Every structure is written in C-alpha cells, then in structure tokens.
Length: 260
Image (cartoon, rainbow, N blue to C red; front, side, top):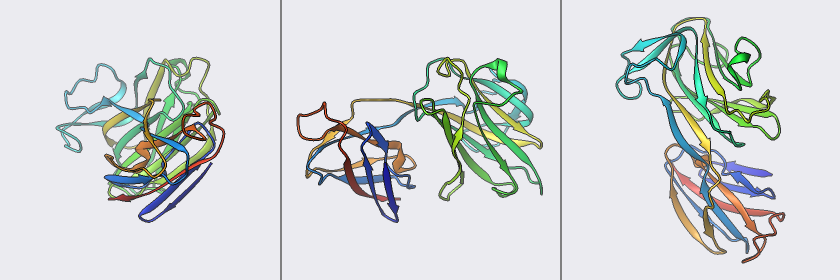
C-alpha cells in the first residue's frame, strides 16, 4: 500500500481490500476516479462517546478520578491524579478501531502520562495491549492534546498519534507489538495513568465498521464532509473492472483534494 500526502491534495493506492484515505485536517474533501476501475468510498468508524463527564457519574470508573468543572467539551471534565480505568467495549473489535483521549497536560516541568488499552481486567498492572506515553519530551505543559490509539488485531500491532489542539497530528507509535489476547478485545478496558494531575475530556471509541460504501465509477467526482480529517473515510477495492466484484486483488487508486 502506498499513500501520497501533500498540502491540499492526496492520493491513495491499495491492492488490499480497503485502505484509509491519508490523514489531513479538513472539513470536506473531493475524490475523483480516473482509474477505469470501480472504487468504493465509506466512513471508517462509528463514533461512540465513552465518557464526556458532563453527568458527573463515575460509577463505571475505578481509581483516582474525580469531577472537574472545566468546560473543554460540554459542561464538565475529569481529573485523574493517579490511575483510573473503565470498560471500553464488550463487542469484538475490528482492525482499525481507535480510542481518542483528549487531555490537558500538567502545568509542570516534568510529567509522565500513560494512556492504554487492556484486553481484560486481569492484565491490569501488567503490559497493556496497546499504550502511548505523553511526557515533556513529546508535548508542551498545560496544553490540550488528542491522543489516539489504533489497533490491528490481525497483525498484532498498534499505532498511536498525538495531536496538539489546532495543529496536525504526529505519529508517536508505529507498528508496535501488541498483546490482544484471544477474545478479540470483547472485555477490553481503557486506562489513564499520570504522575501528576491531568484533565481528561472526552474519551471516544471509534468503532471500526465495514459498510458497503458508495460506488464511484470511472470519471466520477464527489465531495464528502468530515468532522476533523480526511482519514475518517477509506477507499474500498470493489473489483478490477465494472461488475467484476470478485477480483479485488488488482491495484486501485483515487485522487482528490481537501478543504480545511
């Protein structure tokens, strides 16, 4: 798979079943199909609000977590002063599922924040399934960030991204070895651990979905809206030629441009 990404434009090429459109911060984008092949476009995720802390209900959490009246998103947030965890999902995950943590780093010279996903609660305190560390070396004190963990159960790896508010994201972890257990993450948890008090708000589970998508025939050109970035969508390899949906092994490409 090859992705080309430059300012204002993108191209995505794959011989796999599907691939994400390259990440660009945007509110909309246009794709054009000049391949002579049939290409599909579909959303990648269903966004599930794990907790926005507006209801001040922490009954699903265990650990050092409390209400914060900060209005980062909505009417409330949470303080984490040590370690806190809760269930993520009880449904099997698909490759490409993501967890978004929005945090504000401590107003301190040094700090260590670990945001993690565990496959089962019995692994708490041990090596997590996937984790990313935020500290003074990859972030700025007293600053808002969105941290994303993306899982790939098939290849037993994960990626992680750190995005300072209003700026492009940076890949913090690339293809790291993961420990997903044998239950497709059906009993998974999220954990937040910090050596100094941080603010968290919100946490969103981006559940991977494999919808049929919309067909874009040769010569087709369409505009799609997105909330934050172009990677909310993916291209789907429907077949090498029109009406030949069984042949998904040939390379397909699509190009486009985005608007912030």
